[in-house]
Length: 136
Image (cartoon, one colour):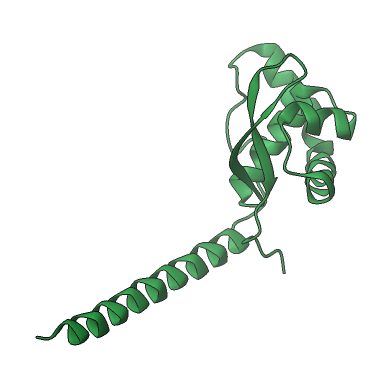
């Protein structure tokens, strides 16, 4: 087999891998779109304490609106650290962070894989709207 024949085969293989990756991505997006919107009860509170459970019960009616607030702010201002998101949305960090975690679970937000710096000078992940998410 000549070098040119090997390169043609390699190009075909690379094309096949890209096709499989595209199909897998489409299936993943479809599965996320079909998934129901998470509630606070889809996962237990972060701390199995009475106060944490009470806080989860109290926030449940507002959770969807708060998620949209976080998502909308990230759409306009992201990528950003949790601290910046909380400040930008005028939310307590203990309210913002669980909403961002829920958005990640929904496939709407992801880590940018980059680090930012908090007001205390510490490094923190930057979060962004997932450009592959399709809410339509």
